[in-house]
Structures are given as C-alpha cells and as structure tokens.
Image 1: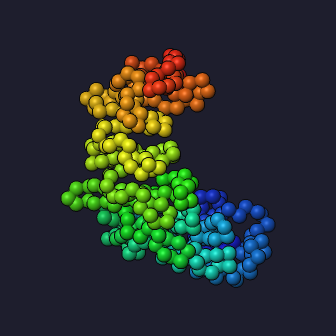
Image 2: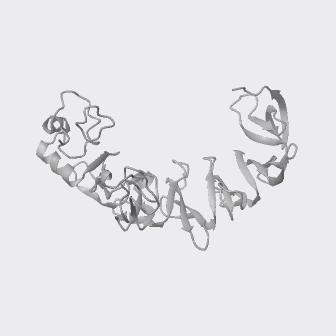
Image 3: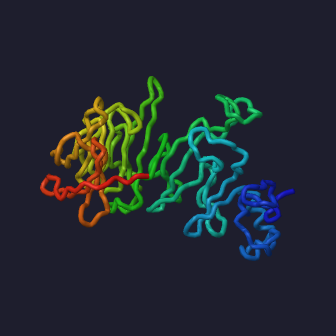
Length: 343
C-alpha cells in the first residue's frame, strides 16, 4: 500500500505510527487530511496536478522566498553518500519556483544550500553508481553495498546556473553568516585534497561573488567570527600535531602573525593564547597581534572572555587555579582567584 496522501510507494515509518505516509507527507498531522485531494484543497492544487509533480520530483523540500528544492531521484534509492555525511539527501537536486517551473535543473548531487547574494552551494559529479556487489547484511564493508559518485566537486552557482566559484573543489564551507560587509556576501573556505603521494590539503577563502580573498597557500583555517581574524595552519591542520599556526587579518588583508607556533587559540580581537612547547604539555602564553607577551609566560591552560562586567577575561593555569582579570597596557590587572566549578 502506498502513501495515503500522495499515493507514492515510499512509506516512511519513523514519524508515522500507522505507516501510511511518505517522508514528504509526514508533517501533515491534520486528521481531516486523509487523501491527496484533501491536501490539494489546502495547497490550492488538484490531486492530479500534485501527483504529477510528485512523480516528476520524488522528494520536495520547502525552501525560502517561494522557491522549493526538488530531486528527480528518491533518496531512499541511494542508501549512503560515499564522501560526505549527507545521508538521506543524495539525489539529482534542483530548484523550482512557486509555479513549479524549473529555475535550476535537477542535476546536482545534494540539496542546494542558499546563501546571501543569491548563490547556492552545489555539488556536481558523475552520478550515483553502485559500488561492486550489495552486502546483504548492510555492514558496508570496504567495496560493498555503497552508492557513490566517482567525483563530488563543490562550488557556488546562481539562478542562471553560472558557476560563481567553479564546481571543481573537494569541499566548500560557509565560514560566516554576514560579516563580510565589503561585498555583502558570505565567505567560503574552499579545499583541495591530494591523496598521493600522501594526504595533504590546501585551502583558500572566496567571497560570494567568487573573488579570492586568501589564495591557496595554507593547509587549514579556523574561523571564530571575530571581526575577520582567522587562525591559519601551514604544513598541518587543526586536527594533527604537525605544522605551524599563525593569524591572518581579513580587514588588513595580510598575516599579522606568521605561522610559527605549535598551537594557538583565539581569545579576543588582537589577543591570542599560544604555545611552542609540546614537550611540557602546551603550557601557554597570552600574546597580542604584535606578539608581545601579556603577563607571565607558559602558565595558562585556557583563557577566554568571561562575560563578566567587572573582569573581561577568565582563565585556568597549569597549577589548576582559576582566575578572572582584565588586560590594560599589555599587563594583566584586577586579577582575582575564584573557586573552580565542581561538576
């Protein structure tokens, strides 16, 4: 028996105890809506029209500003994404307007994510292929039971399907919501991976107009939404103990601290916690953007802003004590010790 609302064969049993609705229709909880025609009265569409739309686009996602995300392949037919963890969203995705006219032809591997300036994050590839033979136990052993695209290349497109950032990159992430006011766009970190002769990655930053803000000269970034100061990694990433760390200032468009420290955390604007002492458990020092030392060296485990009106910063030291304090003229002032919270 198919879905009682739309008539499709994709019954979804997670949110529907009676197992009578598909994934698209499970959100309809009104007991008076029992058939496709009942739903169509609310949707201002005849049952026949809506059924044809569902046949054309097996899954529909509501989207913003009157547009809808649609796919011509039902995600249930593709159990697992090979490279990315967007399970249940694989397909051939596009965009239709409120009159169901295709704005972007369904051909992208994952749902298109919209950002400022009318751009969509998109993934192109060779299409979904079953990898060797199906593993009946669904254990997903290496080489079995997976659907995958030989290529998954990410970029940005607009409504005209023009590639604002070419869909040639291995990964793309939006690293801010609306900070980059110079062009009123989002910022995106774009990754290139190389697996031979060894695993490395290069990363750059682009804005939503496709302008390169930071070229491919670093191996990783860490973004803090902190007025444009980005932790940069050279010859390593934030996930390993290799390489060196520094700071790039987007407003100044240059490195303010060259990558030379073993570890670094952002505390506040122009204030960082650094360590070059792996042997002693990363005993850390507070520095400013000029690399001037604030207070004593190598005594901190952790420092952050406190949210306290009287003392802006809080930190724990290597001897397991907790303090609140201010910083003035490159010195720690108003220092008080407090009891650590016992959980």
